[in-house]
Amino acid sequence: MNIQIFGLKKCADTRKAQRFFKERRIRFQFVDLADKGLSKGELRSVAASVPLDQLLNRSSRRFVERGLAHAALDPGRVEAVLLEEPLLFTTPVVRNGRQATVGYCPQVWKGWE
Image (cartoon, rainbow, N blue to C red; front, side):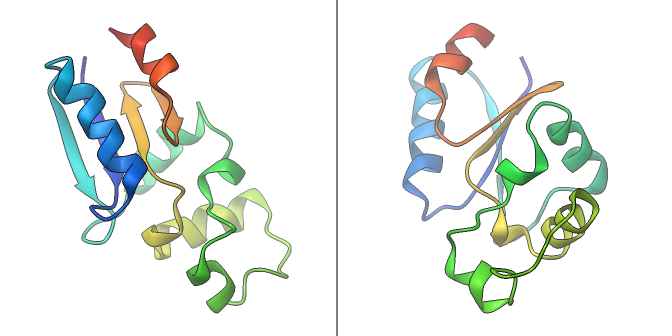
C-alpha cells in the first residue's frame, strides 16, 4: 500500500484519517495543502476515482471570497481552480495508488488493507 493523505493540519477529519492509518500501523505520506497542492497528474489520478465536483469544498469561506459561489463551474474550470487554490479541496483526500476517497471514509479504507 502506498497511502497519501492530502489535507490540512487544522482539519479534524484529516487528523482522524491519520489516526486511522497510524492505529493500523500503515505507513502514509501526509501532504499539507496549506504548503503544497496536488500536481496536475495527481489531481487527474484522484479525479479518475472521485468526481471533481466532490473535491471542491463549496461551503468554505474561501470559495465565497473568491466569487465562485454564483459561478457556473464546468469540470475544466473546477480543475483549474483546485490547481490554483489547494485550500478549496474538501479534506482529507486519501489516495492509494489509483484509488482515492474524499472525506473521512474508514469503511473504504478497511477494504484497502
